[in-house]
View (cartoon, protein in one colour):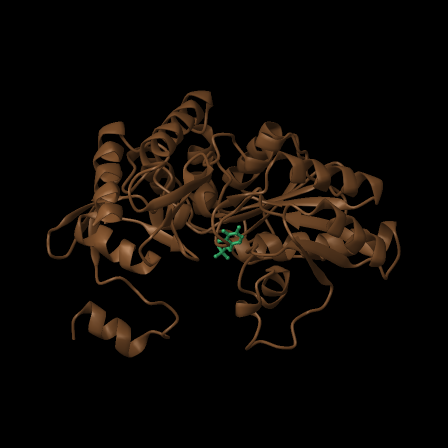
Length: 387
Ligand SMILES: *Cc1c(COP(=O)(O)O)cnc(C)c1O
């Protein structure tokens, strides 16, 4: 059997894969096993932020592999401590807990918010308000935090303690936190899986003001938008927010699994010895790669992200077959006339890899995609939309 036959025979059928098998890549170019080359506008869903086969990241990872690949959290390891320091110094946060994925980073945030609520306000203050059309992960608690019924129906009962607010509706948010005993508000600055929709400055202000007024934690889920993709180090910066907890994952590892939960001044001491843990969390190989990734997310790179973003907005807005362009930085959604899956398959045929989010085409290119490649890919998207 070939790879696709083996996959369909032996893997749990949880994904509808596109008919393409990767063989290798370099930067934003990917080659399949038939020798066809594609321009990658998906980055493995916002993971490979410096593209494939990135020399600097590989050197950082292999240098660590040459020392030791893993050590338990019973001992100190330099890459882990250094990454935590970098994350704190660059965000103003105070402490970090490392895990292996976005869902785990959010699970940790939820646990910490509940413990904080119980300690600071009382045991019944456990509710967390999240947003409808949000996405926070696939574990039971993060599914419960995900305000989309489609993901809930087969997994009842889910952990209780989550309320769903409509992004943009300040009055509803205030009513929810008045009527229920809450610990936190949890949000994505740009709803990714939910359709690449920024929450907007007004609603960001509402989140901040209501969190202050009702003594709630603000939890920013920066799993997809974070680590430079927004055009800032983290997307909440665009809205002038200072969350109490920030979660991130995807791009931080540059291709190796990592999750991070960052705690601000109000939450820094919530988790104490024995309260939480992860065998692989803070794995030195993943952290060594992430130190390299984070050290390269500087003002110059961020300016490049914003420039590429402007170019895509400018060029695709108003094109035939494209109803709107939404998003922030290099996390962009195209509302297209064709069904999104059909559009993505056409793009694949034309040699461009895109992902979908609900009925939209979602673009998540590498942050350093060369301008010429981006221009070529965008022209092909225009063709796809017009056909
Ligand atoms: C992808 C994603 C998650 C889940 O991350 P995993 O690494 O797949 O567990 C959580 N929140 C947001 C906003 C995401 O985009």
